[in-house]
Image (cartoon, rainbow, N blue to C red; front, side, top):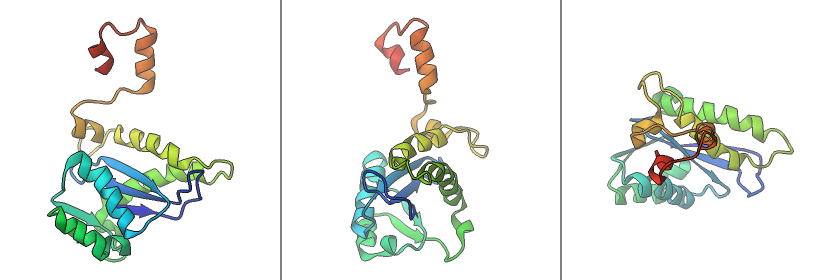
Length: 175
């Protein structure tokens, strides 16, 4: 879990990005936020991680005060998850997530730095989808495949199938 701040204020009022990443699969999830209080971080964790995958055995994070707070620590204890912080000033201790933050941020900053673009929080989901569908050289699969068990069909591939004659059955459309 890692924060990416500060970002320019979006139309929706968001100024921060909270990034979650599975250590096993490399799967990334992000939450654009306007309020980065400890309570909001715990709520985002519950919404994006706990509701989708259940309680993790370990939550690794940097030494951000919002995550080190009593609120989040009580939440982790309630989930029966161990909470482990990385070493101070040592991003290598959580290298996989730091690389993901860098990748997402390079993409988001290109959009966010344009003063006319105030929709970075809408675009970031597409960027993360692309990241999750990129081949991982270490794991030899995409993070999306490792989590879901199938490869995501791209929009272009879906459109090409549709234009070639549509889908025969509803189950073909879901494949």
